[in-house]
Structures are given as structure tokens and as C-alpha cells.
Amino acid sequence: MAVDSLKNAWNVADLRKKIGYTLLMFLIFRIGAHIPTPFLDRDILNQMFGSGAMMNFMDTISGGSFKSLSVFALSITPYITASIIFQLLTVVIPTLERLSKEGDYGRKKITQYTRYATVGLGFIQAIGLTYGIRGAVTITNPAMKWPTYLLIALVLTAGTAFLMWLGEAITEKGIGNGISLIIFAGIVSRVPSALASLWGMLRVGEINALSLIGLALIVAFITAGVIYVQEGQRRVTVQYAKRVVGRRVYGGQSSHIPLKVNQAGVIPVIFAMSLLAFPQAITSWMPTSGFARFVNTWFSMNGSLTSIPYLLLYGALIIFFAYFYTSITFNPTDVADNLKKYGGFIPGLRPGRPTAEYLSKILNRITLAGGLFLALIAVLPTLVIGLTGLKNIYFGGTSLLIVVGVALDTMKQIESQLMSRHYQGFMK
Image 1 (cartoon, rainbow, N blue to C red):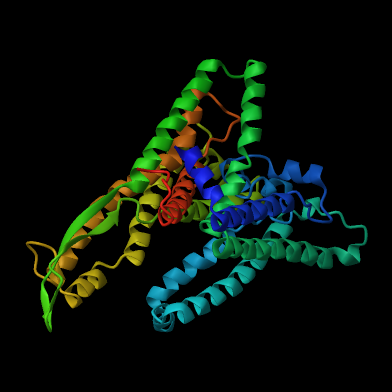
Image 2: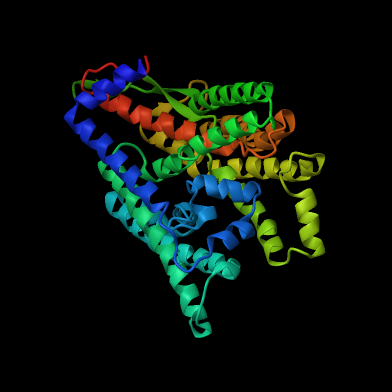
């Protein structure tokens, strides 16, 4: 079914051009991921980075660029951070709120501000990262120490800016959301090396076949669960009153408001992980301190009982940010006002405030389910490590969530374009 649909998509000249353009951008991204940043000693760099849940997550998101510190080491995360910041500021700053309601002009201005913020955040992160790995920087002339640090930071910032342009180019001329697809490509590119590592561990007897079978079953179960929850929604029935304009009668039909179970997507996980990264970042500056020993013992995902406080805090933060981000992206009061404006109402409820309270009540319930789902997916890597004994394999539930979500969104876009040309799509 999916293969036939892809063949149909390839037979459409416009879709074939878009898919080809997207694949070309993927190739450029993967080439850039292997271009090394200058003035760095790779051996010392590998010893400094080591391993850990945060390091592995950043390396997975960047497609292996973070630990090797290629020109794309910062990946697209500064752009994501800047986008989130402006989404939050749009709610609290009246000027940005007015811009967001001015159509294409307003969106273009906010996008322009987001780009500037991306470059600024990328440069700040690049300076901090460069100073953190200063022991791996090779400098022959001491007088060139700070100019060399600045050059490395500028190279890393330029890499992020180029990825931002790449993502926007895919969105404009390719298929799907470019930024999400870049993250998707980075995660998928790590799959072959992970499979090779699993095969190597199996051959030397470090793991057994039952562990691999258990891992495969867990991955299949999680994938099915992600698809089920990502597609899950609560449909609130809406009835529109009849209106007579001249000799014509308008309205009178029924519709619905789709409230997604996972309204916030993967954003709460990113927020929670970013917040919990601060203690680990501090420990890298003072690795022998008592604070570092406490964090490394009780706040790390190591598959033992000592990781339980970390997992509990991680899950609680995810649920909190799920509510926080959902409240920003969906405003029941605005929806209720728009329904009232266009003559719509929920059967059994008065328009206005009662409708807003009803929508808010439903949203709170399904957001709890979505937040619990995200928390479960996020903590699954540690649970899998403990159940299967795969100590040296990083199994990322967050990564799987991103991959499946992006794949579903891209598939829907291709599906809609195929259906407009009377081809059979991916889904019946």
C-alpha cells in the first residue's frame, strides 16, 4: 500500500520535484555533519565528552555531529529554542500579539525576529561550548588563544544558521516541515551504527538473543502507542444556527472541534530535558565537587535504583510543561468567542463562558493523558536498560516519538496532495 502510493507520488512531476529536492537537502545535511571544526584534537575531544543520557541525546538529535563537534554540532536546537521563546512572548507582549494577527506580514516579521534570535542564541551556546572544550583546542601561538576560540564559535554559529536556512528551504520547496525533517534525518542516520553496535555485542556474547527480541518488541509496542496517541483526539460536536440572508439559508450544519490528546507534541520533553541539563552542565565545570558527586549519583539515567529521583522529576516536569504549552497554544475563551461570533454552539451549553469552561475541562483531562504518555515514553530508555541489560546502547523514547510524529505529518502532506490528484493515498 505505502509502496504503491510512493510510486504514484513519484509519477507526479510536481511531487517528484519536491521529494527530490528534500532528499538533496538531506544529502547536504549529512555531508556537513562530517565537516570538522578547525583547531580541535579529536582524541582529546572524545575523552572529554564521554557518555551519558544528555550527551547521547544531543548526539542523536544532531546526527552524530555533537560528539565529533563538526560544523553542525549545535544542530537546529537554537532555532527551536528561539521559536519557543517567541511563541511565549507573543502571549505576553501586545506588539507581538498584534503582529501574529496581521496575516502573512506579521508572520514574516516574527520569523525574521526568530532568525535574529537564533543567531544570537547559537553564538552564546557556541561560546560556552568552545570554552568548555578549550582543553581540546590546539593552539601553537598563545597570543592566538581567544581569536581561535572566537573563530570556532563563529564556525559553529554559521553551521546553525545554515541549518536554519536548509530547514526553511525544505519547507518552502520540498515536502513537510523542514526543521522537523532535519531532526528526523539526524536521528535516522544513527540507526545503522546502532544496529551494527547491537550486532557486535551479540557476536561477542555481551548480550543474548532474548534481549534483542525483547528490545524489538518494546520498540514495536512503543511505535504503535505513539501512532495511537498522536492521532488520538476528542471531537466536540458543534452545531451552527440557521441564518436567512435574502432568499438563502446559511448554517444549520453540524461540525466538531478536534482536541488532540497530545496537543503539545514533543515540546514538553525538550523543555524538561533542557531544564535538567543545567545541573549536569555545572558538574562538568567542577567534576570533583560534592555537588557533582550528588548529581552523578542521584540525577542520572544509569539504569539503577539511584536514577529513580531523576526519572520522577523528569516525568513531573514533562507533565507540567504539557499543561503549560497547551494553555499557550489553545485558548478555550478565544474558541468560544469565535463560535459565538459565527453562530455556533455546543449542544446543551450556552455560548460564551459556559462553552469556554466546558472546553477547558475537556482539555485538562486529555492533556493529563497526553502528558503521562510523554513522560512514559521519555523514561522508557532507563526502563529498557534495566530490563534488557543493554548497558551500552542508548534507546531513546524521545527520538522514537520525534521520528514517528514527523513521519506521520509528512505522510499526511503527501497524502493530501495525492488525493487532490485522484491517486490512492497511504491511508484508507
